[in-house]
Length: 162
Picture 1 (cartoon, helix red, strand yellow):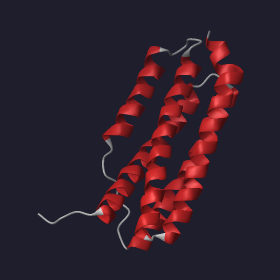
Picture 2 (cartoon, one colour; picture 1 turned 90 degrees about the vertical axis):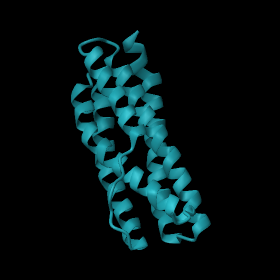
Picture 3 (cartoon, helix red, strand yellow; picture 1 turned 30 degrees about the horizontal axis):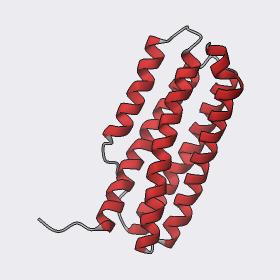
């Protein structure tokens, strides 16, 4: 068995987040449809559009590395998205649904922030300068989305759920 290095781990993690972004892209319209709050629905729709760009950035990185853009099943995002589905099923037509959806969305954001932060650090270590810029753009979007969701939770969604 060949010895794996940081570059192999970088590529494997890119595959992981690529898979995750594709799954998130599929889940966001369902979450938007389930949301009662117009503001929350709009946030999900906006992030859906951003996710498309994030997928494209990942594809650019794969191209820069001379690797095919392929995902690798990510159990972590599958679990987080499954929790979101459970919330949609168990809290449908309740005042708490939007608070649960928002919490599920923030779990997704935190996962993405963790992955992109790690990838950016490794890209720097490995000298992938073009990848750093692309990863940094996505990381900034993810942080901004998380911040917007926090403000939405504090300003209206959590109060409406109680």
